Amino acid sequence: MGNQLTTEKVTECKKSVKAIHDVMDIIGGKWKISIIACLCYHPMRFSEVLKEIEGISGKVLSKELKDLEMNQLVTRTVLDTQPITVEYAITEYGRTLKEVTSVIADWGMKHRQRIMS
Image (cartoon, rainbow, N blue to C red):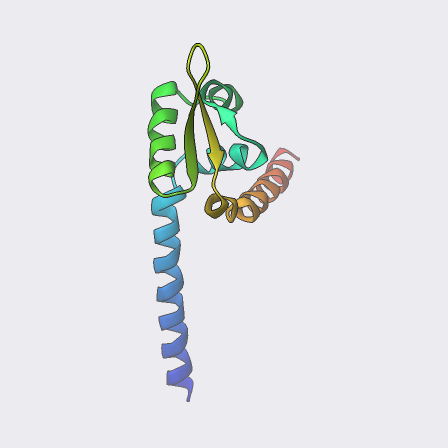
């Protein structure tokens, strides 16, 4: 009985680790979760996202937005304005990550307070 429980836990652990790796392949890295978090509040133009996320370059932001769009987390809309404006919005599927971003932000604030005191 003990060996079966251990085997089940190992199998469950492996499944969890694989799922985490899948998630990190999509939203991992330094910037993607920040981009998702910003867009969960409201659609933004490229320049607004660039200003909102301190330290990201335009080139990196462009690449990350393309990756997020490819994974159906973000939509890109070209608006009929002069000059042309591009707006990014979180998709319904992407919105399912809002709770994850909130938990990460809450933990980050608590961690910062702990380390700073």
